[in-house]
Amino acid sequence: MIHLKFHDPGSEKQEELLEVSREHVTNIFGESIRKYVGETGEDFNRPIEEETIKNLYTYKFMFTI
Image (cartoon, rainbow, N blue to C red; front, side, top):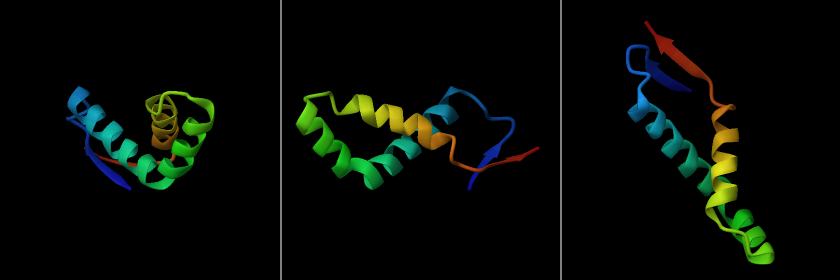
């Protein structure tokens, strides 16, 4: 669960959430994505970014007002 302060929904917080999600995705799916990239020759960052955004929708957010 991620706790956000409602008065701080700015771009810095969005970047922080993306970075947390990116680290999470890399830790969980990094090896399988590296294997896929090795087979297809695709850029590593593209599937990581796609999975990062998908991963954000699985988080439960709690807003404190």
